[in-house]
Length: 121
Image 1 (tube, rainbow, N blue to C red):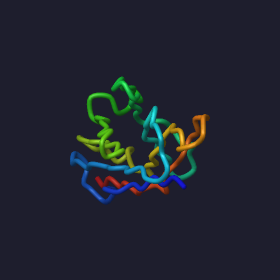
Image 2: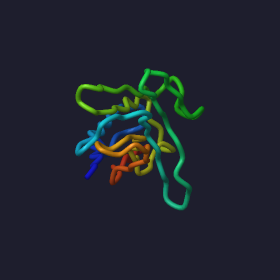
Image 3: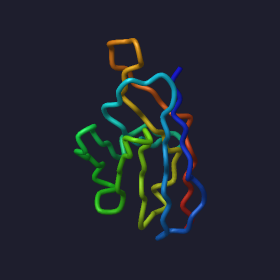
Image 4: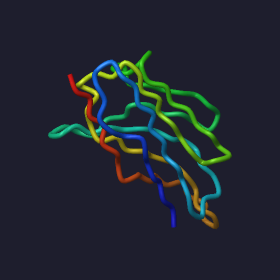
């Protein structure tokens, strides 16, 4: 079984910073793309940032130059450093992993349970 566990969310004032972490565990043979998504109340879930196994990154326009995604392959962990936070960044943040389980040949998407980020004015 595969698990993605996020941590690091919370309440922060506008202009502040938070660092999210997402650790993958279980019978995993390989992890390809890792990403962070967010969903605000009444809105769809949108991609925030993603990073490939080779280290290439992609960001939503709204977070460029403020957020940084990184990964530690040895720890099967992906991070999201969020700086200069704004009230509109308030959402539940979900970790996503495209991975292959041990003994299986197909790639599948897995999601974490989400962590709340609230930015106050």
